[in-house]
Image 1: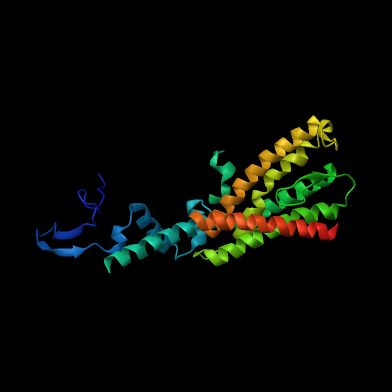
Image 2: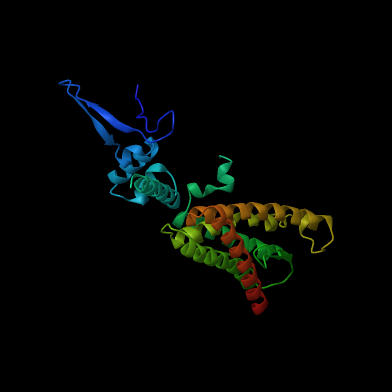
Length: 93
Length: 178
């Protein structure tokens, strides 16, 4: 099963932070308080879009062809993601 | 065919492809309008008159498309934060006007070729024209929304203003050339 990374606190909806990291090989555990990178705070669909976009060297035309969508639809989707990233960036500051 | 494609095909079609399909639609609509004496003398107007020259029908359809596209493109440049493309606006708007083919298409049927204003045939044609006009307006709205990436009140207000300005300009052009 592909488990999804929980991003928000189920109790108060606040963005979760990383408290503990674990090495499967040597069982080392690191404890601290780390913020999730902004890209990890995006939805799985948004992350996939960004990865696909990078893989096609940032070409919206090729993205549109691959997704079988029109150019402005894909551009609008990218603008929405940029907007979400800017909001997350502002929240972190 | 999914029903959403009927009122919003622009998620899949835009740019050069929509421009080519729209141009074919424009030429066919203009030819049928010429053959049946159907004048689109304004963005939302229809009239019926015999024996006009072909260029008049062509100018009516062309100015309807060019004015609304120009006003919507200008609105997009002013209000949108996205990098909008002129070909998306002009292409999707031209594609939006394809349903207007319905009225001249019906008038090809001999029974509906009457020029008498108060006849049931005319009411029938105008009824179908109103349906095609509503369909076209929904398509125009979605074309504008997607091509310019506008939302909420910016979208609605600029859409209404563009429609009003295009109607005025198209009317003026038609008055000037006739």
